[in-house]
Image (cartoon, rainbow, N blue to C red; front, side, top):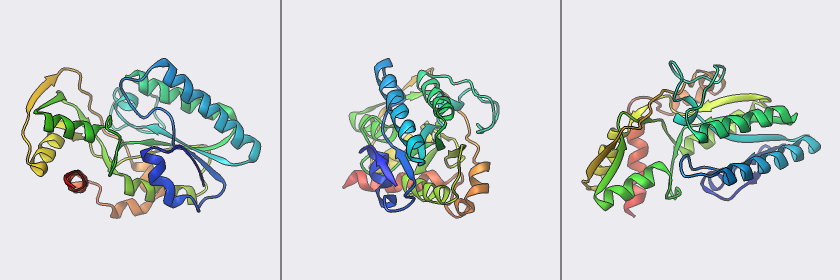
Length: 247
């Protein structure tokens, strides 16, 4: 597999570099759901166009990473499903959905994965958990009231990607998440307890909560049944994350 990019996800994909030779993984582009610009979006659209054209010319499959986060499914009625109509509720969600449509129209073989919130060592500072830890250490945490996030261990994500690619899926879209929406307040509680930190909480009225359907993922990759997904799954991955953060 050829991996385009050198960020958090791209680094975690490297163990698969010698597998799936007919696939190009586009692990580059916009990974920040807030604070992005039209220029950032345009650069990612151009990168996707170039990658899709290259795959079309060489007969390879393009693996594209979209989002299953609030920006995509925040207005969904019930769990967010891959086959349901979507009305994105943030510019980032609208951008990712537009890129999915761009890829489908390109004619290139492809697999689109809508990811939950990945958790693992050496995440970029702007992502959810590093940001919360930094705020806890600074003495004040901003919480969107009522917000919840689906957390998934990046190691489990890589296992799932390996299994999905082995199925030789084409023109499919699959949610890759734990299927559990964890209140951000519970995430902050666990981080604070694990790190021995307390902080003032500043609430904002901009929260979003949704559940991501993983019915399709479970049908395609039965191994996810052994990954521990469920209400307590997030505690294990937060313990792993805070253990690395203390080092």
